[in-house]
Image (cartoon, rainbow, N blue to C red; front, side):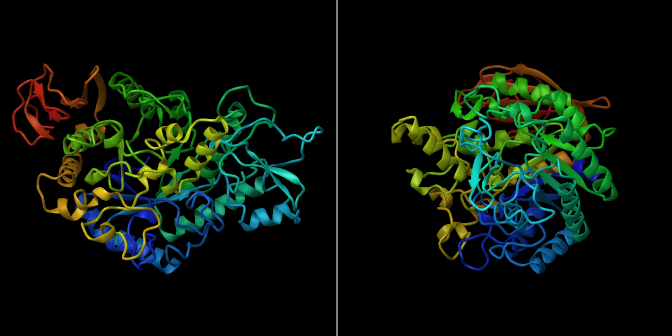
Length: 541
């Protein structure tokens, strides 16, 4: 893994919601370029850019119809090249989203495949109905649907593990892998620094037999992290990635520490890092829609497991698929600012590359919508339809969907207190959170005590501290309210103390304060509500 990827902080941009430059209500590439100095000032060294390819937007860009072009909603290829050039000037590297489990059903490959055009017949996974007329198997999708869709042109069903307009590619066909390699070379030659690889451990389907009976994701055992998937990643690395100075991070669903080690083992040559999900399960049962009370004990146990399982981690609390962390893991009300700073203390003091999601650095919260009619997210709408079939009343469906919908993270970026938070002069594609007049970049940029200023300082401290970047991780305490861990590196060590509650908590540790989210300079053994502190026990870190 490249050293630059270890030493930098990543900032994820969801282009549709970041900055609109032309008043059409949709964020775009010129808008991102306009804001690059803002990110440089924050201390960002890498940008992960969610998809900007042409797409019908059945899943907001994750249904791609052309991998080597730019969606006109976002701009032109010239805009993309200008963004890459400006980022180089500012020493910011850009990761593209590599979405290769599926394409859009409007992609030319699919159109040729459904028409049985020579050479494209098996680019996707097609099957006839069962002899009794039923679906090819009993699998269900990640988006709460059956995962087979009948195509009138072909006269067969195609597999889609996600939305029905996202047909899965067939990696049993070597031509598909060759196409993917060409796509990767295209973007690496353009100057991108690597890829965030979408659902990258479900590419290969070992069989299409019926799945074990379970309430969710039937069929998972036939495609989750299969041997064929490893072979695909090894070939992509050997043929393409190893030829460039680039970095890869895999979104790997339901991955275990053992699987994570295999996927990131340098000797195997697959991925540099993976996103683990276990810490995000500290407030849910099995799937994200089944909520339970957030547990510091579960959270700490998951962090400890993954911090020590892999040679290098990726650390995150938010992304475009997850609710806002301050609303999820802490308090977005009376202790909003304290909570946002405490979570920042944790994120920037874990072992691994930190990923900040747009707006996280100013403490953006979950949406304030009152009805599912205000949502755009296809996943949320599918879940609502499924729960309606189960005869759940509307109020209960909304209670389940509201705290978990992906649109919580997709509301437009809050830049200032002007109309639409400075995101657009037009009508935003998704409603802006009404708290933008209080929570915005402009209000925080020059305030030394703001959430953004605290993020900036934590990024600076991390950049100066080998202990925080490379040190070992040891969990010391994870109770109902308190999370404490130790980082050690070459005789130096730091203690991180985090209070996940609205009460003062006694934590019997001592040392010099490196940084405290409350701003205090001395620690007296008691953490304030939602306070985060880093102590260095008198040793410079």
